Image (cartoon, rainbow, N blue to C red):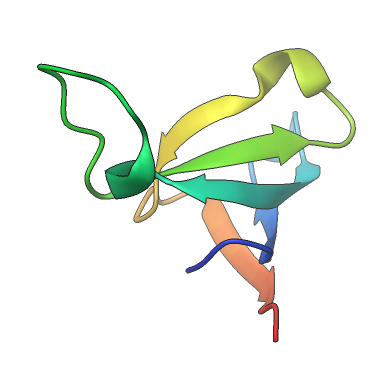
Length: 66
C-alpha cells in the first residue's frame, strides 16, 4: 500500500472508499510511532478519516496508484 492508492472499507454496514494520503512512518509524531499505519481520507464518511493499520482485516486495496 502506498500514497495515492484507492482503498475500500469492507464492513457490510459501513462500506466506504478512501484514498491513502500518507504513510504512517512519514507522520511527524514525536514519541509515537505510526509504522504500519496509513492515513486515509474517506469519501462517504469523511469524519472517519485518519490513521488505520495497513493490514486491517476490513481494509482492502482496490486500485494501486502509478
